[in-house]
Length: 225
Image 1 (tube, one colour):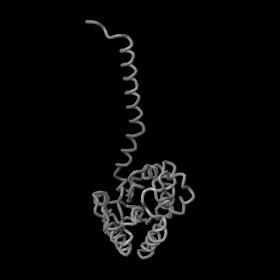
Image 2: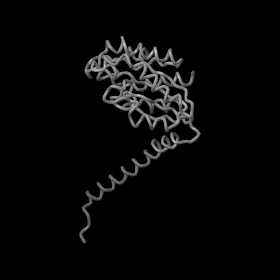
Image 3: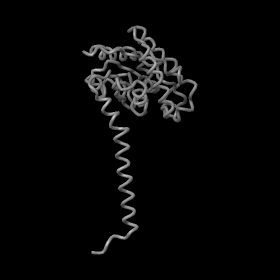
Image 4: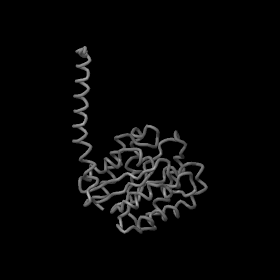
């Protein structure tokens, strides 16, 4: 049988080495993180939110800051709202049920950005009631979690069809009112990020540096609260 050409043999050898190296790196950096997150004795942290949570590295950045004693899970759902009258109310998503089954000891709620959609403005009157209902669901868990209400980062422009003015004038004050009524601690991500529009390429979603800034604010609240 004719032997394989030397250049093909060399190519296969290089591919094999790369594959082995990739597996080694994965076992070092990925597997330990998974194991730590699944540790039964960990303090369970549920990150509740929309795509600013679900589609970014903020929850994982938060876990890195908190360390191995914590299990941080991402329960964000892109496009979700506080309002129950939208196309995607968070409380009606599978992630909401998964978050409750997680039985967290800490719940971080960062919702409201998508409620600044002009088509939902007429529902603002029910925003607070819907938010209170969401919080009540978590307060009723057996794990009796501590719940933080987050003022989300600013909407820097209308590129995605969300209203900066409505967000600032209605959504943010409503979130503050929920925290006041329910005597819940709040995390002011809005103020922490307002000077960093460069970290929000589309005006709404943070880049990797923006995600780290969000994680830093949430981390500070958890460890000092």
